[in-house]
Length: 384
Image (cartoon, rainbow, N blue to C red; front, side, top):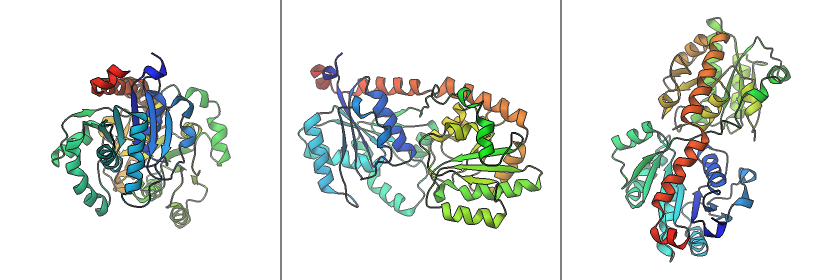
């Protein structure tokens, strides 16, 4: 099938900034281009991930240049994109893009089916909860709602959220790209850059440094774990608005030399390889963490707050530890339990095996291709 014969789908995101939903959208755009003509559109002028988009393989990449709030001019521009490219499906990353897609569909002569990939479980702020009251009834106008884990689907069903069609497709990770083998030889050298040796215990945290990611909880747990005789260091892989507060807390807790903040990374593999374990300690937002999948693929055990789909990623005692979100004392106990390096290596290997078996990128893409082909309107398939 030539590119001209492939049916067209449009992927719509709020922005292309750093974040799990945005990374997922970019991955889908790049990978689905082998099967469809893909148009990638984003609403806000935030394109930090644009360099990761394989634009040469896409039909178009479009920014709608939305102003604050719900911008009707941006909706009109999206409707014009519909008219120009005639997508059979619009695949939206979360509820805000869904609202734009449904509104643009009313303006356009083209009536694509709207599918939302929903990445959210816990709503952290009252404003988000208020917005959900508006978005909730819109879900019934969708052609399909895709959840990224079973726990998320069950969470929202208990709260009365329903769509006409619902599907679970777990997030996936490129297990070939996140192969630890090429980084093993240089891991010790990488540690030495930060003043750590092979014998030091290092826990990583890979996240945008925002309050809901709770990086301060990890620092406080490291200090408490000292009392149990486990001296952990921390590699915070990322950046964000909490960085000044984190640096102040490092000084307050006397953790100078034991905690390093790397800043934003376009490639986190070498950082992950230098860690003995990876912590994801969020108190909200996480649903089925891509950062956790990347750590698992790099053969790292997880220390993870029990939120969203964490139980579908972590097998306690085999691939990592779970603790109640926000419970610093329980997090410290996990660090104390994780102090045996031989145990960490064995659990890391189990993590790698689990993610290859259940959450490989190729499996995820195959499921999306099957779903999209099944949901494309007959007229679009005939035209293709």
